[in-house]
Image (cartoon, rainbow over all chains, first blue to last red; front, side, top):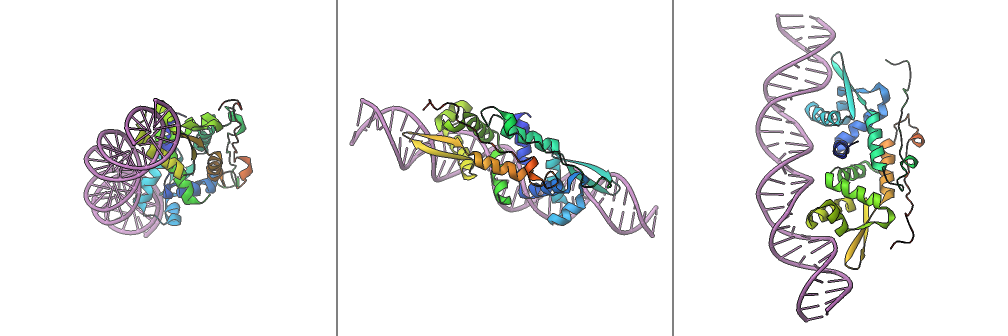
Length: 113
Length: 113
DNA sequence: TTCATAGTTCATGAACTATAAAAGTAAATT
DNA sequence: AATTTACTTTTATAGTTCATGAACTATGAA
């Protein structure tokens, strides 16, 4: 991950509503959540949420697909892992392997979608 | 780590110069670096660096002690570990242990200063 | 005590970010 | 086709952050 990109990812997460939205998606797992559901849960007006989602999208932290009328968002774990790797780079006497985490969530249920 | 605090830590790191300064300190290890040394390496005017260091200090990411005329800064690894733990919370089907990293750097050499 | 070095604080303009109303687009329902 | 639902874009205002010069404080040396 290039330095500038790490800053972008950090900036994206460095906001109360955006961090909350991202965590909601992380906890929702591969199933994801519709924009409207996030809006309901966080009690954010639609335009405000969209602008925050756009920041997360631009940072590569959130991906989405249209599903009929709604848009389903999912956390991009690879991106988070890149950030964690970057943050822990050179932190333990240059032995990255000892502290770089990798998150690879499994679907809660194979049945869904 | 409380949510608000995680945002503060993320905000602190979400700036080019601050991330660079923090990484410099992470790489310097327990030995740390004097403010002037950081200023030289990053080519930042003193007041600019001080204000960034204050943000990192307030976020608990950097601690410092005065050593004669200079002030020696060190990265606070515990804080970083807290952030990593927070970010990976609930990311792998609520099994935190599988992806929460812990960074515990060793001194490079006991001989130097 | 005077001087030099190392940092910090303060003030301020420029640049950026947040919020949300209004208007727009896309898909399903009637 | 008209309407409703779900979301995005545009735009305006309000607020925050950033960079840096000038002034200040702390320590050590002469």
